[in-house]
Amino acid sequence: MIEELARLARRDGPVTVLKQTRVLVVRAGDIVVKAHPPGTDERALRARLDAAADLPGVMLAPLGLERLDGRLVTIWPAGEPLTIDDVDAGTTPWEEGGRLLALLHSRPTPPELPPAGGPSRLPRAMADLAAAGVPDAAAAPIRAAYATLPPVREGGALTHGDWHLGQIVRHDGAWLLIDPDDLGPGDPAWDLARPAAWYAAGLLGPWDWERFLTAYLAAGGTAVSADDPWRELDAPARALTVQLAATAVATAARAGEPPDDAAEALVSACRRIVAAAEAGT
Amino acid sequence: MECPKCRGRMRTFDRNGVHIEQCDNCRGIFLDYGELETLTRMESQWAQQHYAPPPPAHGGPAWGGHHGGHHGHRRNSWVGMLFSS
Image (cartoon, rainbow over all chains, first blue to last red; front, side, top):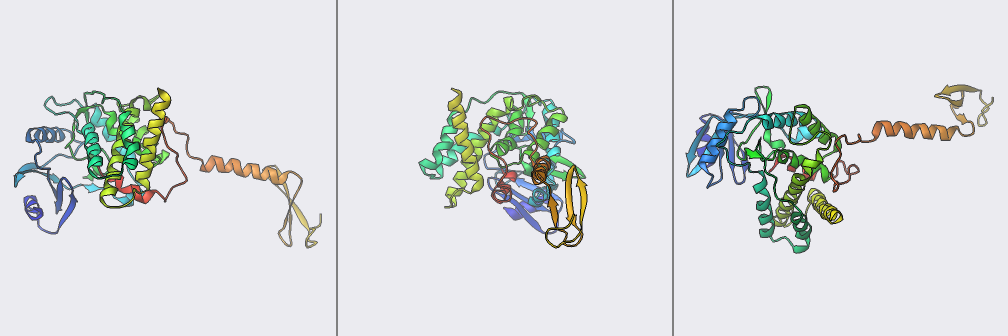
């Protein structure tokens, strides 16, 4: 599959596998080729690719869509991704992330787009937790926090649906969002919820969080209110905390390892979510 | 004034309102009553201004966690999370 994907890039030279999970992503020369999960809805993906192509300066535009062994394959110009070195050097472009999300949220939503994929990741993570053979005692705080979550708020803003630092690249000197697989109408606060969850878990420092949020608001971001952003952020950030905790604990259990510090911090946040909900009722 | 330690000559300095005698010979320092406390207070004020985390301009959730005290410790295990779904 890797060789066939690389052939679709029509570039000579070494081939690098960038990701091999539910998706397979390879790079050859200045082209990136991505095989989407089997069973991906072609109409939905086409609508999302068209939307990405129509967001110059905000999202990277695709070069093509093909089919290989029954899987949908998209072809992209290779951008320059962020690395852990950027994080260590303190050069993470949090401001650019905030600004790009604010721009995205201000764009009209094409009518044919399916709903944003963000909220559907949470039940998937809970199912993963159940399937991973995690001891009940370890899963209990995560399940209890999950039970406090309100129904997902409807929203019609154009949202990314899966934003993290791997979803921003530099291309032709400009930062752009990548990966429209979960692009669609939804509550835009969900796009800020993952960094918000990291912040609330004590993982992301207050400086970085404020850089991101301040840039989002300064660029006219409408997902949260400037005077009290946690009014809108609270529910989606709780959902992402539960999702991240479930994923981290399930991943550790599958590897036969104890949860690491980051997983523990997220589980602690789940305990605080439960305590705050009990105090509030 | 004569240095109580080496009998050298003490010279007087004023630093931010604190009166300090320093020996030209052994560089030893003599503080008047209360001046050590004044210096300690000034130092802690300076440290607060320069090292304290910024007050979060946009608040946090009721269930927010504790920041600080684990830099470099938790970092490695969570950095991969920054880049994955």
